[in-house]
Length: 129
Image 1: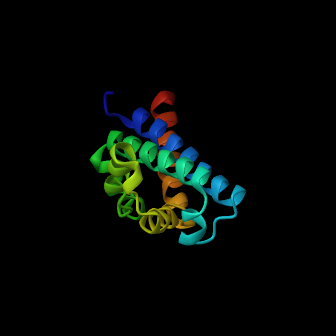
Image 2 (image 1 turned 90 degrees about the vertical axis):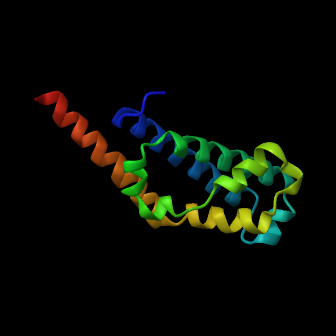
């Protein structure tokens, strides 16, 4: 996939969708702690898949875009994604819970939304010229 502003917009929209999925899963299964997550295998599956998808989308973002989102950029998902994809039974759900709390931070969500809106605004202005 060619890296561009349009690609970044699509990836950010999808990342936001998966962040919402994690939030919905935690709400649906009453997850409020690492222990709750350890005891909900269905929620574990949903969250592990969402983390995998977010990490894959993040890799498609241009480096310059990630650098403009320091909160999102600081969330370390790669190791969790690799384990979720290749050795699911070794996942440490204490770490997964901590990472998801970082990604669910409203400031991270705002940062993602602001970047998406800035890109959409600049694309609209470019089309009008």
